[in-house]
Length: 261
Length: 183
Image (cartoon, rainbow over all chains, first blue to last red):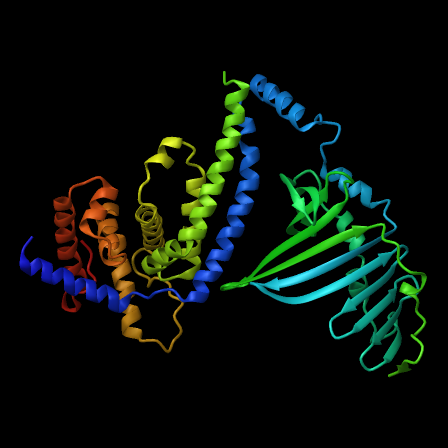
């Protein structure tokens, strides 16, 4: 290699340095976050993929050995999505704590309590409560900071439209999960409960539903949406079922001392 | 037919492979993204390449592979550049060499610099995969001749020859009066 060539390579190197961008720290962090999430999902799926590659005999032999080791037999306790959805038909009350995050930042956290038939109480940020009675189409909104309330007939003009009311029927929405085409993820601890994950389709949107092995009931629902360049929104709902709420929890009576706005 | 023990061993190996890959992602993920970004200049494509590199590692089950790697940053740079150059080539074919490569730069940045970066990327896509790789490792990643030669399994002299050849081509393609003409 000639000196002239070495010099020319140096010029070229300077040219590359001058025109090629370095990524911003925020871009690196965003990419790293997505990478770790992708690897977590990939590992869950991969642990299941080696089974079909085995011969039937060796798979059966391995199954006997492995299930004997962990103390249960497949077919009796293996959780299916259809049974999760079926169990929801018998639920009379539940609570969902929904957290919305963008990157590391928590945008909102909303607690929603439900009791059949059609009683809903939602706790929002800024000390706001909404109590909704769907059968009577009545909404009690309470501002605890201002000690004010508003009682509305949500069936009247200017009130909630039917579509909006439907969005509060969370249990019914969970029951609309399409079974059969779901992808099963490996079990893991979710909210302290051993759970099986299902990649499900709810009203055309792909989500991950975690259901507790022991009870067969949903534990959490995760939705990740790409909002465009570098923006990802993660919504996670954590569930508790058959919650005992106080008698006045869904009462449409305004709290004592509060005034109508 | 595999024994039960060998089947169970597959599970153990997979678990440890995943742990290794996750550790490598934590340790070198940012470097891999930066390497891809420098080649592509596009954060979305760089993210895709970064994920492809690690997903590919997840498939490497052979213990021999994991035992033999003695310089992970260098190997990851080679893998990343290979994937990123594939993307450049696909992009070049898709755009029939006539459309500018995409950029996410805001309009207020130096237009000339962006155009030159696009010309450089287009030129890289025209090189053979190995030539582009050697050039990228040397000039984008500042790797030494010795490191590149070791990773690619060739002599340092060979690296010098390749860089000389690439340099001549790029000088023709990137010199303004000669234009961005094709071979």
